[in-house]
Image 1 (cartoon, rainbow, N blue to C red):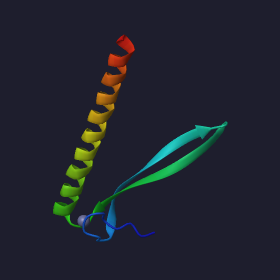
Image 2: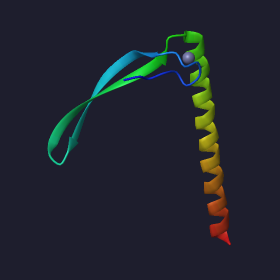
Image 3: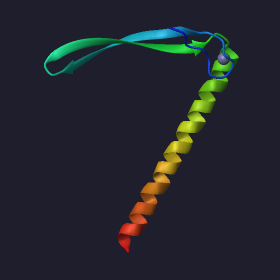
Image 4: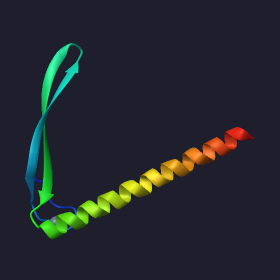
Length: 75
Ligand SMILES: [Zn+2]
């Protein structure tokens, strides 16, 4: 499965894998997760900081909406 870096397009490598046991409908399934990183550590750092910035933006937006909702509810 191809998993290129979103920033530089280089093929990414697996930095770590972990297993998760999920129980659903009485059945136990083991899911193997893998974290992919860019082969260029500098690029990976930039990608991570961009992801973090996006996440913070989304959270700030969600907080903003929540505050607006609360403000409206008061009236
Ligand atoms: Zn990259």
